[in-house]
Length: 393
Image 1 (cartoon, rainbow, N blue to C red):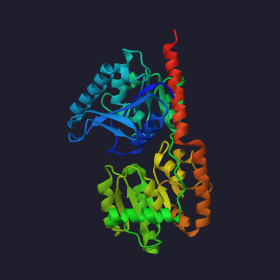
Image 2: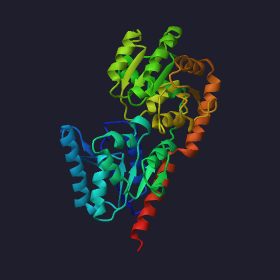
Image 3: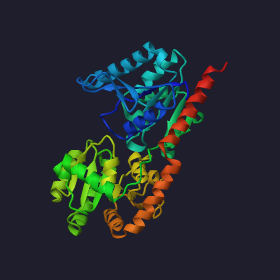
Image 4: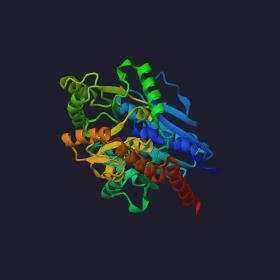
């Protein structure tokens, strides 16, 4: 075991669950068994939340985060900086999720002790960190500070390209792909058990015996292509009345999706299933995972579905093409091609043997290249190299 003591900083964390939050939770839990100590600093979004918990073996410290938008951000930044400055014996290196306010606060605090700070860029395109730095109030100033970090982790080629275009030093950018846990293979028994759990928890998630089930997991956002998915489901539902589509997640587009479901007469056939701490049972219950996004870096939800051995249908965009070759690990369809999206989902159900073969190939790919163990190995090697450099004369 390494004697390294780590602090991981992420403003959003459990029970607020999204891709970036699940990545930090999974990485923290994996590293907790390999290093001397892991502490997670995050925001205390609700006053009734305890100020400290243990989550999957990781100590989680929740810092003040008042509800007022600008004031709350400033107070949170101050709390991050104060904790890092007053608890120097708790860490040797700081790892921060997102190139935003947390990163600036950590860099300011750690500079006094010459402690390495590693930043992790989340997302590409209009919702990525580089775009935020370009458009947000104070974003360009924060970008100047972030360029001083000892390393910046880019989970995908698209994110690396954006970092380079934004002027980040190429020698400090480290490509480390996302990683996920590789669950035990799911079978018919696990599918029945998972469906029973969902029905017991929420009657709206009832499924007729043998009913086809497609799922989406992720942020409910306009750029995720969910309008196309709901449109594609209208004809699928007419052809297969018992088929169901579950959309798991939260986000600003939820009300719009609800209105689309109602307008197309799909109430009960397309269900907003809410947020899950873990998607394991969701994937076990399903027959196909669908990701029709307009843009992705490296989708954690897609990796999890592939790792579970679930057939996948995804949009034909660079981030997804990095994981899937059409017809080998899944099916890719052009963005906004509603008819092709509908046909691809139907093909999974109509040709189950071919779908199972593609799913097995996808699971094998993720296990060999994108496991959480591999991700932790690469992070630990980076952290130890930076510490050695910091200690060198």
